[in-house]
Structure formats: C-alpha cells, structure tokens
Image 1 (spheres, rainbow, N blue to C red):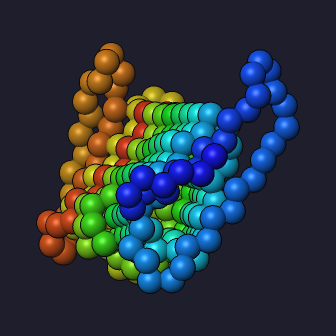
Image 2: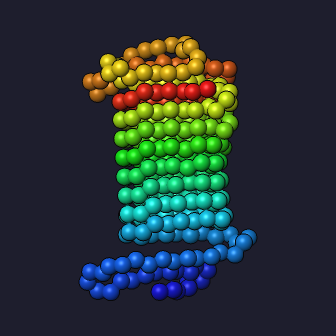
Image 3: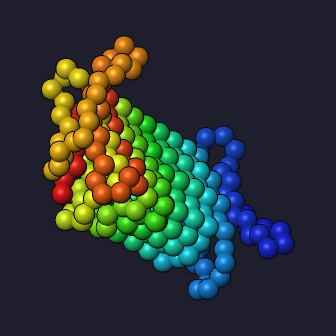
Amino acid sequence: IMTQDGSSLKLKEKSSRGSSHGNSSWIVAIPDGMDIEVSYSSASGDLKASDIAVTLTINTASGDIKLQDVMGDVKGTTASGDIKLRQFKGNIKGKTASGDIKGSNIEGQFELATASGDVELSSVLLTNSSSFETASGDVEISMNKSPANDLELSSASGNVTLNMQGNGLQGTITMSTKVGMNYKINAPFEFDSSKTYDHYGQEYIEKSVILGNSNPRIKLSTSSGDATIND
C-alpha cells in the first residue's frame, strides 16, 4: 500500500488474515540532492541503506541493520539482529538486544550497544564523544586517528580492546577490571595511580594516567575480561 500525505510518502505491506509465510523485498531509490527523512519499522525484516545522505530512524523486532556509504543522522534498534556499518559518516545511536555490531571506515559520533554480542569496528574517526558497549561479548575498536573527544569502551562480560594503529594517545586514561580472576590491564605506558574498590560485593582494580593534556577522557572497563590498549 502506498499513500501520500502532504510531503510524506508511506509504504505499508499487509499480509492476509491468519498465519502467512514467505518474504518480500522493497527497493526505494531516492534522487541525489534531496533532503529526506526515512522511518522504517518491521516485525521481521532487514534494512539496507546505501549511497545516500539521509536522516534515518529504524525499528525492527527481528532483522539486521546494514548501512553502506551512508551519510547522516541515524537511530536504529533491533531486538534480534546485527548492526553493520561500512563507509558511514554521521551520528548514530544503535542498539541490538541480541547481535553483533561490526563495521569499518566510519566517521562521526557513535553510541552503540548490544546486550549479547561483540562490538568490532575498524578505521574509526571520532568527531564527538562516543561509547561502545556490550553486556556479554568483546569490544574492539581500531582508530585511524587519536580521539580528541571522550571515549568509553565497556563490557560486563568480555574483553575490551582499543587499537591505536600507530596514532598517538593523549588525555586521561582510565582502565578497570575485576580482581582475582587473572584478568589483566595491558597498556604500552606506565600508570600514575592504581586503586581497588568494591562494587556490589566484587573487588575491582582501576588504573589511570594523564598523557599530555587531561582531555579527552578515555575509559576502558570490564567486569569479566582483559582491558587492553595497543599502540
């Protein structure tokens, strides 16, 4: 079903009454130079956007979100699916309850989280404060430039790794993990301070250092795993 309401175009697909099976595919082409906002909602389906400048809102209960050669502001949520980014430039808030977040050659401000899955991104350039988080899985971020804004990597159960790829690192660096499980804090520099603290009955160790200026603030934390910075 296709309807137009003023400047809005709505595309909607209805299945027949009762249970239904099968699949369908929609391809929407947008002319160059248009200032456009797109909202996508699906109970079970993937969304793929490519070669477009757009403001995009995505909500799918079961499906992947794939963005390639996309520029713009994006808010995306999937209950069960992966988030994949390639050649992305803009601001994105993305969440998945069960799935991985992966990508390369991305630039902008990022707030990406998964409840169960890995976060693995390479050739990352940050233009504003960003965070990458998983409740159960590993986080590995590889930079193509030293971050000038605050950055946080966290996992409740898994390793967190920041690869600088030969780029310098400055700011207030804080790294933490649980004590007594052979978990390690690894970094190519010495720390200024080290302390232990109690959190919900568990003992943690936190190490910090100021490299050059006190800003930005870079934090790596895990409750169950290693925290690592590679130069």
